[in-house]
Length: 215
Image 1: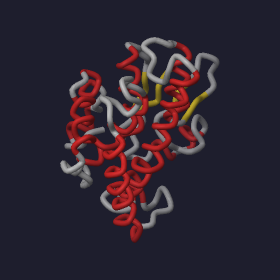
Image 2: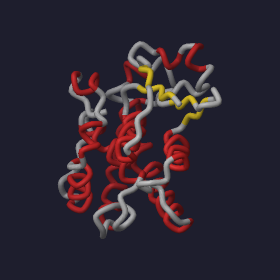
Image 3: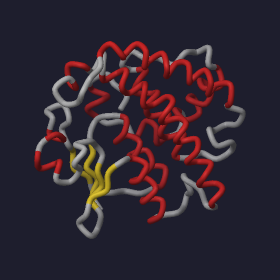
Image 4: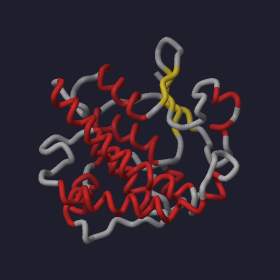
């Protein structure tokens, strides 16, 4: 297997997942700042032109963060970051879906349509006038999440892919104009617990650190 890696919160999710698993994969860097991910050569691997992308042992390619991480868990079940039972896996997927749709997606598009507009305006359909509203959607849903957090992790007492996914987006967003509101005390405490894990720092991309971003 080989990981096509780059800057950004999505590739960091896979890197952090691998670190938490104790797995190591050869990787190739894709320069998304230069738009290499939008070139024909890369689109033959991932037609969506997004990073990351995983080349499997049979030469085929797998894209989308959740699909990649779940595949890796199938290859190496322990430590379980999705779940060991149907019930555990379902709860992880439930929280992952909630975090991604309600927080990460509007937060990410809020960035693409505002702070990241110069980079994305020629690559995707952008809606600059929607940026503030999308950021507010993410803020409102973070307050909603804060009211629901009762354990150490999103899925109670299990650290999972859902925690990794949300953490990577919140950490990135805070470095590009969408800081976490300290009034969300439960979310802030949860963020601190994830941030203290060795894989959190180890998963940062060197180019992101050099540029003052958390990705």
